[in-house]
Picture 1 (tube, rainbow, N blue to C red):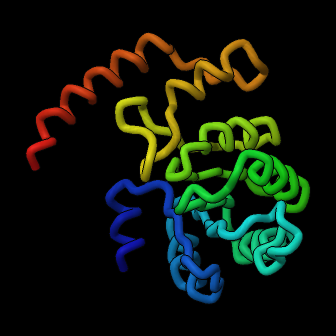
Picture 2 (picture 1 turned 30 degrees about the horizontal axis):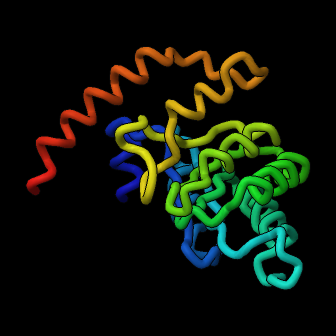
Length: 187
């Protein structure tokens, strides 16, 4: 009922995930999205370290298998949901490249900057061909938020992955939100 009402009210994209990657828990929500005009973005939650051969429970093979199953279940977009900022740069590159070659869906990389290295993870995912990556304005980024958009845009300038975003406008917006945040610190 929620999906039907939200879609009718203008919601265009629904991202669904199960924190333990138990795909049967996604089926009802995915089917509900399919009954609307909306886009179904199904996510795999990243954990572990795909680059460490001693940690083989959450391997690259594990994520590729999940992605293939979500594609069969009707996902329109596949998200990598890195809730704790664990996906290091070279792991992001390897994972995105593998998913791009194994599934026929756009890949969305959603990471938090908890570890402080996730702007580099976004850049490596970009090098591997990621279709969508989340970031936050400089004044709102870092820690449990997303990596710094201003820095990522600057890093990609004059490359084939140049975002075309206006650096001056981003910096102006960041200063505005930094001032707004000052008003809320007491709370």
